Image 1 (tube, rainbow, N blue to C red):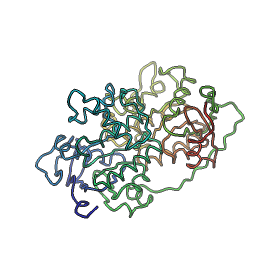
Image 2 (image 1 turned 180 degrees about the horizontal axis):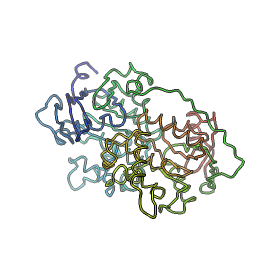
Image 3 (image 1 turned 90 degrees about the vertical axis):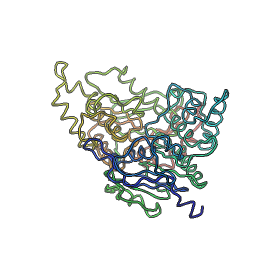
Image 4 (image 1 turned 135 degrees about the vertical axis):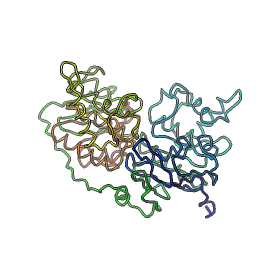
Length: 487
């Protein structure tokens, strides 16, 4: 790649200011992206990352500053951004769930015309999926609603990278691996490098710092609506990047729990489909569910909940809580306030004679706002006013605020920044030491390694149990692919 090509500006946003009431979402932010580079964009939840993406893609008009596409700043808006070759994959996926995969491709690519446009769309998406995620196994004639959240994420990524006459110039990826397992994430990162090597540009937003460090050419750090650091990726280490974001790097000080098993497990399931290992979890344990995504981990969490609760109707006093993985589909109540979304699972404890005590509800909200650092000036604001990561914090706080002795978590840290993760890990360890039991499915290996025991899944059943020091990325991956014969 020659220097002229490398330095050609694809998108340049300079002096961008955006305010929402009294909140300064962007305060004079500058972000310039050149052809042939992958720019990593990091920062805590609420730092302004999603807002500047919305400015770049034309969906949000800045109150000050300018945006130029290929050096031209005479026009703005979504159509101008698309004409400039900008495509976005948002953290909150934007596919139409009632349409098929190829019908969603038609929405994104208006050039798909004519009597046989469905055939063209099918070929386009299948070709791009195979290029990015070889061996994906997704049926592109399926309705999006029938796909898992990981498959939906893969489809939206493929549609955004696809081009009928020419490839996009810039693809913005906002937490693109939040629902992908390690193997799929590695495939995507390899494709990004190939795309950039061919002259394309990628803006990569992720809280998984090893992806940012290994894939980016340049890293931009945002804090409080401003760009505070903009340097070559080679100049950063993980520690340096965390500190640039404003967090203190802490070594793991936790100790795995030596759980006494002198009493019956608090949760148990027989072997799934009559094969593999049985599941059990004991008082005060943190049990991880690992393996490649879509191999039965979420189904096991659902079975565990129903085995204890019987149904999904709310009970006055809960002994088991659930943190959903797909917050937009199964987690948030989009028309409700942040406080109502947080307190809904605790109303039985906040009520007297079926009337909610508003003072106690407000106190619950303010305590958890401070404890888990929910970035909002007012808990009465709507839940959708928050960034995706802050919405996830609310769902996490909702479960922990209950009196439930068992908490099931379906990839609860999706899109949560590294500083908050450290705080949440401390909360989890403290709660487990107090006797609470956690069953935790995560696509992030760092989180799996925090657990006391780990069950590894393959083809819908448990194929291995790892305990203590056996819990390593190497062992999890090995057993994911070769954990014994599964009937």
